[in-house]
Length: 192
Image (cartoon, rainbow, N blue to C red; front, side, top):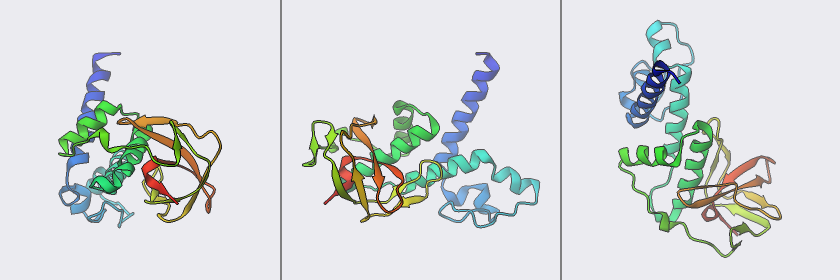
């Protein structure tokens, strides 16, 4: 890998992190009326070069990830959805767990991996098959939009092993019954 390529990677990594931790109100896209104070696009027409520079494909990616992070719950009762959201970020960006933890630390978010506990519907690392209720909204890994709402039903199939882990918490792929979409969950996000 050339020194120019490594420098470009480093530049984009820092640019990514800077945008990720900048409040919406301080974003140029917000000041120009392109996004609202939640990061949602409110003006799709960008005519000036200043507007085009304030909302590029790179911005869209970072803003979607930032919106995912903004949906993360704070507190021990909903800590499981942190793991799922971080898994979606990990899948979408290819970031390592270490890089994600550094971003969270920069945002003054501290993780205690002892908060992830096994539940009654698990046998070792396998989720027991059956129909469960989502406790939190499930988000699309591509857009950050809600694809399965809290209190809707999901199906856990036979031999549902974790597909990955995030910060020591297992992540499972299950089926949302109403939409038939595959979604990712952490055991703490489902109930009966």
